[in-house]
Length: 303
Ligand SMILES: [Zn+2]
Image 1 (tube, rainbow, N blue to C red):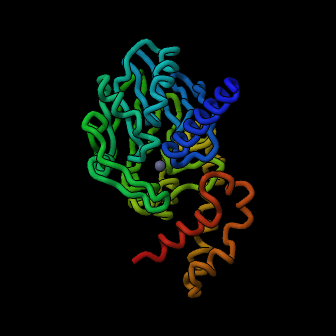
Image 2: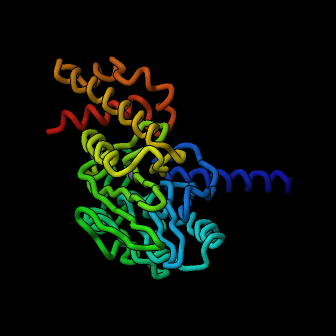
Image 3: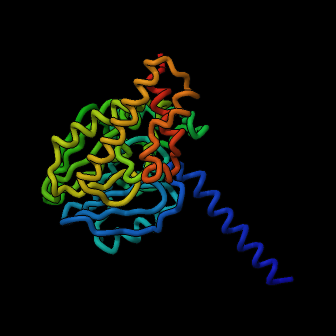
């Protein structure tokens, strides 16, 4: 009886953790292992629950790109301490989504300076509703808000590197930034790049398919063939893999556009399966083929 009770308690606890994970990690279907890996030079990548985190360590302190969700913060800080004893000096948010900014409140309270595009602060300051996930978000507490915002780009001169931060209009959201470490030759794309899976395009937050394609075209002007790419979600990637992703986006969106021009309805466009040959490789993440085609259709037909 007692062991059954323990088992059932354990089961409930597991269920609780899984459900919490589903609620918080809105863009992550299967839980990846929590893991920090070396990328290049003084740069690390932290994979856990939410968007991938980029970490620069060095004599000037710790520079973080995104901070996933609040329950991960202790594990994240413990991992950072393995490679640096210095405090987190800056957190750069690639966009406002909760699986990239959920650690902000703790980080801000601990003295980190939070930096983001101005639309990130605007969206975090007001209630938000993501239609696709039917997800409501309350305004973030003051400690979680970016205290420095920018409109187009900025450069951090930190840890012996030049860190280029660049905004792209209306891509994954309306507040996206990518971060390029020039000396280390590492790029963090934020959610402009979902590696190995169809992307979530947040139309409710100003995202668009053409904005993502345009951003990737510009990114190729910033990097070279040896650049290591930390995607918003998915494994550490190469420029070739980013290029393959772009080709897939261009092919599917060109087909959807043509079907719309032929007067097809949403149902007819989905039934035509314009992403068919990509579905096996890209359709196994949170975003299923019909979701992805649906984003493009809804984007291209909105008034
Ligand atoms: Zn996102």
